[in-house]
Amino acid sequence: MVKVGIGAAALACLLSSTALAQDKIKVGVTATLEGTYTILGVDGIAGFNAAVKKYGGKAGGKELEFVIASTDATPDSAIRAVKKLIEQDKVQVLLSPLSGDEGIAVKNFSMTHPELTFINSASGAQQTTFPDASPNFFRFNMDGAQWSAGLGDYAYNNKGYKKVAIVGEDYSFSHTQAAGFILEFCGLGGQVTSRQWVPLGTKDFASTIAALPDDVDAIYLNLGGADAVNFLNQYSQAGGKGHLMGGSIMVDQTVLSAKGDAKRAMIGTLASSGMADSDQDPAWLAFVKLYQETTPADKRLPSPGLLATNYYGATMALFEALNKVNGDLSDNQAKFKDALAHLTIDAPNGKISLDENRQAIGQNFVTEVVEDANGNLISKVVKTVPGVHQTLGYPRDVFAKIGPPGRTNPECKKY
Image 1: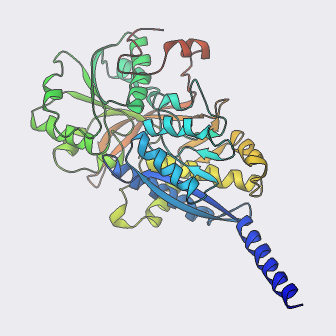
Image 2 (image 1 turned 180 degrees about the horizontal axis):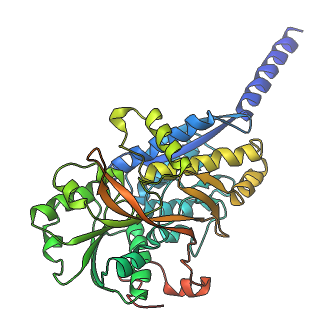
Image 3 (image 1 turned 90 degrees about the vertical axis):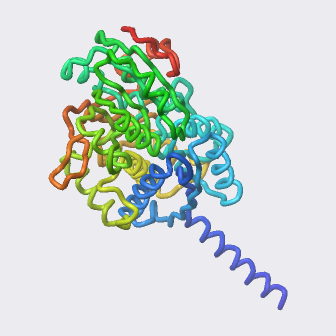
């Protein structure tokens, strides 16, 4: 009888533990909390925290437990972090990753774990979802080329820029973002006469600045984080006076909140992104308020940047899809994956839905950097572009033939 009693107690304890495990979902989150893009990773986590605060930490009747892992924007660091989250922390869903090359690597890795679900946090390389997508990888942010929609047209037709030089970081996201600009700008008759690519983490831009051509109307900068600030400071100190244009993380608050020469150089910069500081939509204003309330003053930017916006949207998708299926992750998470594939989120930066490759369709903003009443730099909306698809208005077969973005692709021509 004693043995039976002990066995029953042990069984009851085991069943209780199993029930508790089933009532909890573990989610792994990665962010670039090391290296050149540290400030972007910190802002991304601030957006994630804001979403968790909004939803209360439970979804589909189950408690969500989050485990955060650090990366440095390299593919190897992202895969190490994801493997650790899966193998050691036993997470069931991943919000990952932040940076472009990381995204391609994690997408490829996701195919080796079809039983799990991967929701992209913020990465924006085109090759992550086109042409070869992973069935269990979902991206609720647009890619870099989509974030360029409208910029080439505005530069050519509104600013009168006909010749542009490009300086960008030499990796997949920067290539993708430049590709979107080149396709639109050159398709209208513009010329890109110089393309310079620098390694992530470049500190000395002297040779890059010296090689800039004199006969261009503007310089398109595809730099982010410390790279952007270093270039701007050195460009100003070298006496640079050219018109500047920027990619999405160039006019992010992670750069606009910089001081000194970098700040002065940015005023008047034309750019484009999936969000804009001056957006007056109530959903954006509510997000800004929540971000400020949930982020300590010494760790937040004047307003959320693109990375905070992306992480917030990805976390929204996680909670809302889990709510739709009552937290059901059975059958290799089939119901959860189907819910994500058909989900439309009312994100702070507009409605976002997914295409057949589980890639975001959303709204883009063309902006100009101005000083606000408090002397802070903000991105002011000058044009919005609704319903931007990954193929940028091209038929899918035509877009596929253009090929993946790279140092010299696409060519500067009308396709």
